[in-house]
Image (cartoon, rainbow, N blue to C red; front, top):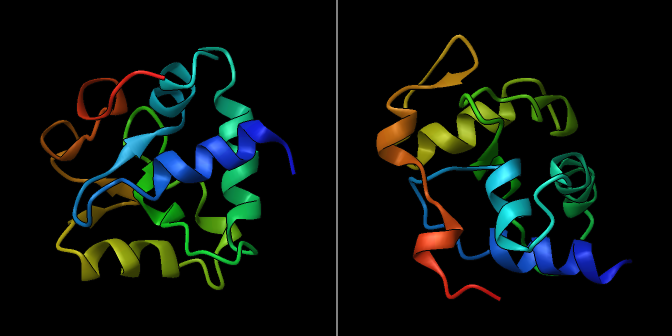
Length: 110
């Protein structure tokens, strides 16, 4: 597994329950602004990590649950978010701007 993927997992593990971030925000934080898709690929692999990675908290730049197909069922990502108090309508996080967690401002820049 690449160091990049491991770094992605470490960032995602720091997203607080009830908050969400985007693939692009993680890529920017890691100094690879053009690597949003690689962050997505990391999320696809996150389900097989020995330490839990809350991949359900990572959505696209508009708050859409684009990664939902990589969960156990098409509804699981939404259910996990809703269990944390995040409202989801039509596969999109309601109040996305309010709930957005930006690693650039929440964490020390690497």
